[in-house]
Length: 133
Image 1 (tube, one colour):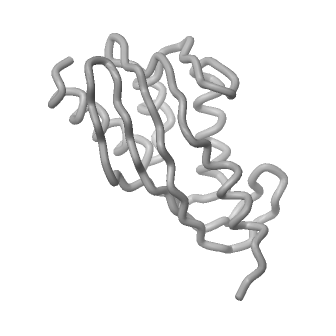
Image 2 (image 1 turned 90 degrees about the vertical axis):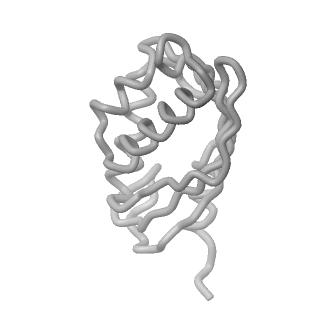
């Protein structure tokens, strides 16, 4: 894909994520996707997204910056949502969280083949556990 096509592709992927459309998200992910420090495979990818969307039904990502080079995308996005369901053992707090995420994607045949980046779990859980002011 050309650089402009990769940008459009990522915008479509982010749109699918923001709609919480797991079937559409799956169409962007290679069945054997490799994720640094996380379980591999599309099923694990979808399970993680489903857990997030159940706990944060209003979750949305906003693109901050995107860099495309060859078959790679470097993305800086911000994710936010309201904690209304159980997430990683933490019962709903009704807190609104806002986190930064930095990710590297390798795209092959129009699908995410490899992913690495800052996970959002640690920062998200820290915001849920932080004392309220």
